[in-house]
Image (cartoon, rainbow, N blue to C red; front, side, top):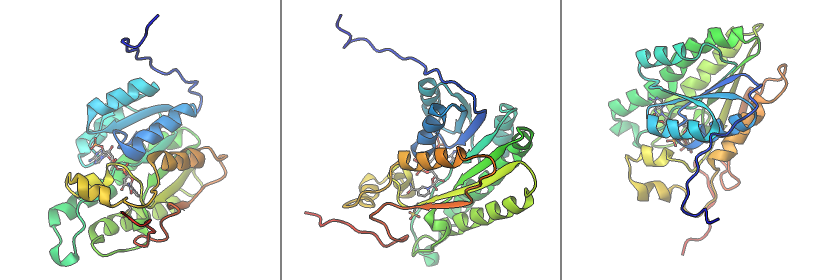
Length: 261
Ligand code: NDP
Ligand code: 8X3
C-alpha cells in the first residue's frame, strides 16, 4: 500500500518512571531538545514557554504536558506552578540575549528584559517549584547558564551581568539547600546553534548565521545530552557546574573558523 500521502501523528508512549521533569523555554533550541531527551529517558515531562502552538506540537510528539509560561510574568508563573503539583527535576532553560552593544550605548529596556528573563524568571520558577522538588524526596534544579557567566566580552555586558547573576543565585541556593534532598546544577554552554542569535540580533538572519560561519558549534542536542547525563547521576552525586564548548571554541570570544571562500 502506498503510504506517501498519509500523515500519521502518534504520541510516543514512554515508561515514565523517573517522576516529573519541568523544562522552561521548551518551544525552541536547547529546551525542546532537553524535553525530548528527558522524555526518552523515562521522565514525565512538562514543558512551558510563551509560544503555545510550538509547545503543543512538541508535547504531542513526545507525550509531554504543555502549559503556557512567561517567566517574566508572576501571574503566569503562579498558574504554571499550580498546574505542576509534583516535580522532581526542574530545568531552568528559558532565557537569552538581546543585542551586542557597548556599555556606552546600553539600551536599558534590553538590559531589563534580559535580567527579567534570565535572572528573576529563574528565581520565580525555582521558588514556585521548590516545595514540590523537596516533597519528591530527591529533587534537582538544573539551570542553563552560559560561558557568558564566566567570561565577560565586549558588547556582552547586559547578558554577562544577567548570566553572572544567575550563577551567583545558583551558588547561593546550593548552600541554602545543603542537607535537604535537592541537588543544584548549572550547565554553561558556549556557542550553540539555535534561535539564540536570531533573537539576540532582532530577527537579522544574516547576522545570526555569521556567528556560526566556518565553525562547528554545539547543537541543542549536545546540550540536552549534558542535561540528561547530569539528571541521571545517582542521587548523592551533584554535578555542580559543567562548562561545555565546541572543539572550535577555546573561550567566549576565541574561536577557530576554517578559511571561508
Ligand atoms: P532559543 O532562542 O532557541 O530558545 C530560547 C527559549 O526560551 C525559547 O523556547 C523561548 O520560548 C524561551 N523563552 C524566552 N523568553 C521566555 C519567557 N519570558 N518565558 C518563557 N520562556 C521564554 O535559544 P537557546 O535554546 O539557545 O537558549 C536556551 C538557554 O540557553 C537560554 O537561557 C540561553 O541564554 C542559554 N544559552 C544559549 C547558548 C547559545 O549559544 N545558543 C549558549 C549558552 C547558553 P518562547 O519565545 O516561546 O517563550
Ligand atoms: C551564549 C554564548 O558566547 O554568545 O550564551 O554569550 S555567548
